[in-house]
Length: 336
Image 1 (cartoon, rainbow, N blue to C red):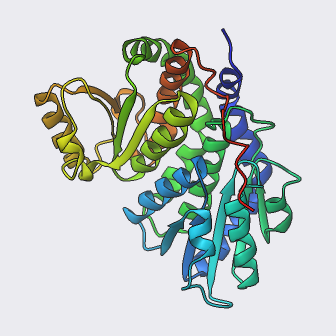
Image 2: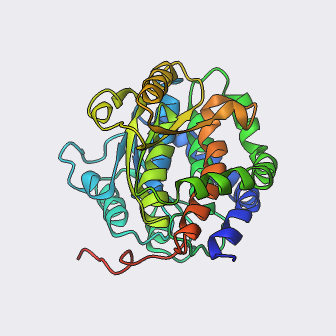
């Protein structure tokens, strides 16, 4: 048993290394532009918008950058855009052809907004049409849920935006970012078996709630939207941890699976309260805690926790006779 997702997971460390080797100077130039902008728009869909959520929340906790996140067509139809406003739009797409995101890039270009495209496809429309293209070095990716394209996109966003930020520990964070490939190699080796067993235990469950705070909400979003629903073909719902007591608290019953991402952020005080309450209800709880995997700046948590989660999804799909990289409908739907 070896699905294509397996190979692409193993390629993640080198994909990050190669992306920094080839694209870092471009990212440095974009960081200078970001510093001069009054507002930054982050735009993507699926896994790509999850990277936008994570970096936005990390920066909201530490810097004064003005950032807004949009899914593709929500930016396209945004009536508050102004011609030649002093802003920058950073758009992420694995294929560089995502219709929603491409439409937003063209709208931003029309408005004179400086556009940055982060994509994995060299000849894509977004790479060709953006004013500042960044090409992630992940080679071809076929697994729909996104592994190396997700982690390289996230790395580019962190590098560009934290370099431009006024976060007082950004130099240390950016150094740790450069060292991530070695850490990820270790995590790929050391987290497989535990998550294989976990997937065996949860293979019969059909719905999962995924919760995180700060930058981990973006990862919870990815876990739910693209990893569980697209990869493992399970129902799933992402929430900020603080929203546990609004709605989900009435559904967190015995034997309902809840996946919590905990990195001991200040806001994870609420995550811990939700975990404790769920235990009292005898819900089926899975907790991924950053401290169990790495000693690293907590803002980098999504880079760490995504690796054991990938193994969990890989085997969850396998134990349900699904290929975690295949699709049934994605690719057939096109909005003209």
